[in-house]
Length: 336
Image 1 (cartoon, rainbow, N blue to C red):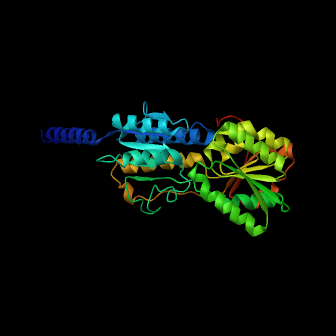
Image 2 (cartoon, rainbow, N blue to C red; image 1 turned 90 degrees about the vertical axis):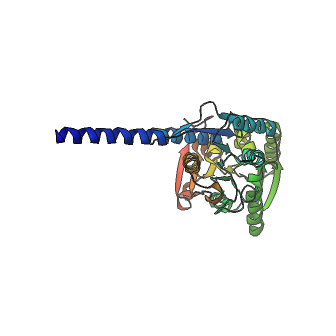
Image 3 (cartoon, rainbow, N blue to C red; image 1 turned 30 degrees about the horizontal axis):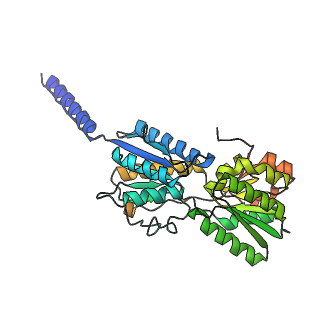
């Protein structure tokens, strides 16, 4: 009889514990706003969602994003409306992908009585973009991940392939804060080497195409573009122009190389997306965004478009000594 009572007590205790565990489980709504459709930002979005799914399956809490994923269409008004809609939907955190989206989302949430936590992804210069007080202590309702670019490392590759370059093109959008510091760094690097540079900018596909054509006609021997979403969106439209001119395009992300540029150098955006999701979960489970450091990553991977390399006849064998890894890729619209 005593044995039966003991078993019953244990069963009751187990059931109580299971009920308590169930009561502790939470369901969180995660809003995602992508600045624009392009290969890099799509890669980040997919990685964020995959990691949220994995965490939901492995733990007690559930993280829901279906119905809360928005495309900003590179339009400030659209991004603002998306943020307001997510707030009205009662999401527990907003993840803006890319600097312009993060700036708009933060400006809106900052006006709330109780600001919705913001966990940005792929912001190149969070301090320079006035999103955080410092990388160690953001200081408000916001933190996230940075894809800060090592500009000098990209240009080192450029001069490793051709030490005799006399003129370099700088192709970027003046409307993107993420490009300001890398372009300033590139100018300082080139000035120190005594190398001329030609700047061309664009704010949409048509302007970028015109800028690329102007650079091709100017006689530059290579072109540098940082992690600039405006240029990224237009890469498929300009890479053949640069190939025809025999100009290698060195860029700040592997997605450029996927879309036809000779070289993309920088972070692995799958990892950026995964760590963005991890940070969002940390915040939802109680971490203070104001005191949660912004995550940064190793910028050691060079992605080479082998079709473009062959077309312009450029040797990149020396890159292996300057990078953590050299990956090879062929032209496509998006990552598989």
